[in-house]
Length: 91
Image 1 (cartoon, rainbow, N blue to C red):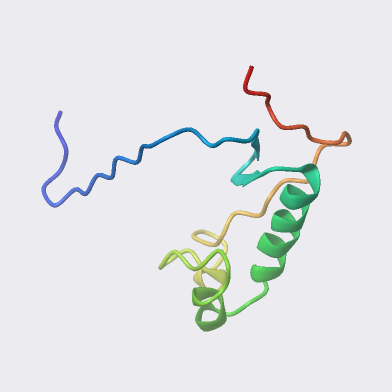
Image 2: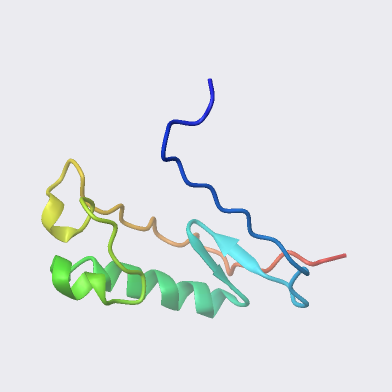
């Protein structure tokens, strides 16, 4: 089965980042502290109404914001693991 009409695709590429990156859940950072901060900001933005969420760091996906209700609402970030996260090394 092919793509549906009006489907949009985006191909993103380029030179690899010159530094090691840490990826956890939906967050990417260079350090455990950066990911921890992003998680805290994500959770705090979950308390905003749709208008405020639309202009926040992570933005708003229409129909899935704080005002969408429990069936379509935003997904909370899981707790961080009990260990310090480390970036994957490039070599």
